[in-house]
Structures are given as C-alpha cells and as structure tokens.
Image (cartoon, rainbow, N blue to C red):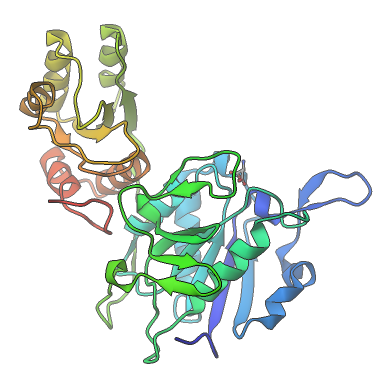
Length: 346
Ligand code: ASP
C-alpha cells in the first residue's frame, strides 16, 4: 500500500470544518482555501501533492441543492485525470444526501471520492476536523502496489470509520461519531493504522471511462407514516402537482395501517404513474413486505420495496432515475436493482 507520488484534490463546499475564528471579532468565518497549507501545516508532512478548490461563496450544507451536486460532479470530471483521489469538505447536515447523489451521478467511478467534515471548526483546540481531513487525504491517495486505488467509491470518512456514502445517515448532532452505516459494514477503520475491509469494497473494472451525470428531477416527496395519520395528509401529498415519486417511510419491515382509504389512495397514485417506494423508519434492517399482512397489502397496491435503502439514498436515486426520463415502470425496475451498492437484494 502506498501514497507516494500521488495527488489529491480537495473540494471545499462549506460547513463547520472550514471555519476559523476572527481574532478581532471572535466570530467564526470561512477561511480562504488558497491558504490551506498556512492553516494546516501538517499537510506538508503527507507524501502527496495537494491542491484545493472552493465554492465561492462556501455554503452551509443545509442550503445544498442538486445544482451544487452537479458542480461537484463537474469539478471531479474536469480534474479526473490529474488526481488520484478527491476529498470533499462538506457540512455534516446533508452530507449523506450529497454522498448518495454523487454515488449515482459518477457512473464508472474508478477513484476515491471521500466526503468529510467536522463537528468543531478546524481552528478549535479539540477539533475533529484536522484528523478527519488528514485521514481522508490518506485514503484518497492510497493505492495497491500495482497502482490501482484501494477505495474507488464515494465514501464518508468520519471519526474513525470509512463508510460507503450511499449507506450513511447522520445520526448524532452532538458527538464526533456523527455518521453510521447501519446496513453495510465499514469499508475501513482508522486507528493507529488504517485497516481496510477489502472484502466489502467495490472493485472497479479497469479502463472504464467515468461517465458523469447531471440531470436530476426533484419532483420527489417523502411521506412518513405514523399512528393516526389523517387521510387528508396522505391525499394531499399524493396529489401534489407534478409529483413523480414518493418515498413512503413505514413501520418495521415495511408495514402501514390497514386502512382501506390508505390502500386505495396509494393504489390510485401508483396507477397514475407515481412511483412509491417503501422504506423502513427503522435505522437498521430491511423492508420485507410479504412478512405481515399489513405489508403485503401495500405490495398489492403497487408499492415497491426499497429493501434496506436509506431515505437519503432513496430520494437521490429517484431524482437520478427520474432525471433520465424513464417510464414509471422502468424507474420501479431500476429501484429494485443496486446502481452503486446502495441496497442489499437477497
Ligand atoms: N450546518 C453545518 C452544515 O451542515 C453543520 C456542519 O458543518 O457540520 O453545513
């Protein structure tokens, strides 16, 4: 394993990690990444060449939109041949959405794209940002002895864990271990050494050309089922003008109340061409609609299983597929197949 003579491009989009304290006012502000080496002198100690580009202005990740994902894709695509890997610095709030979207938009990805950020700004004494950044750079540059990248995937590195990006969820707002991948094992654990879990890392076919995608259709909604949900809430969601797909967050292994009005509304919406994907509200586990009558009836209404997909991945995968103008049935078919390792199909 080596990182010698490699180069990594850092793309700073915004978020807490890139902030420093103004010595006069005491407020937190983003620093200019042209001066990256001044602020993080440890970068000189790495064996690889590091360049950085930044969003101008940097954005809090709560303001991220599909257009920003397109911008990241175009930066990666334009610089693809020049760098061995990419590190994206991003606010934590929507990092799981961005990582999921990029995993679909970067078809045939053969290089590491590592998203990271921090809970405390990089200027703070107890910051987690410095370690997250240094570890991400090391992983983005890491190669097998034959020169092929070790992790040619879109990932999130946080605290000491490298996770497949489209499997992640931000589950903790306060602690340093902010992300989890409940349904897929970590791709690497970063302790004293970085231990790669080679058996679960995606293998790319050599010589595949990166195929960037930019078209996303945001006519997607999320409907979370809860005990006592009113018919009008479901009816209004399914009647949103132009809506093309709905992520239905259900109980347990994909169950919903057995109300005739609910099944009728869902069936009629499916028949109108709205793609409805059943995703569990549980953090871990999978949808299995044939397990209980309550799930079985949903399946009979034309709803498709999201298996063990995260809501973040389901939303962005639907945006991606709808962006291709596929028919509702084609979108349904493709939701049932993994594109970038986002679901486990038994
Ligand atoms: N609100 C910030 C953001 O997501 C929080 C963070 O950076 O972690 O951009």
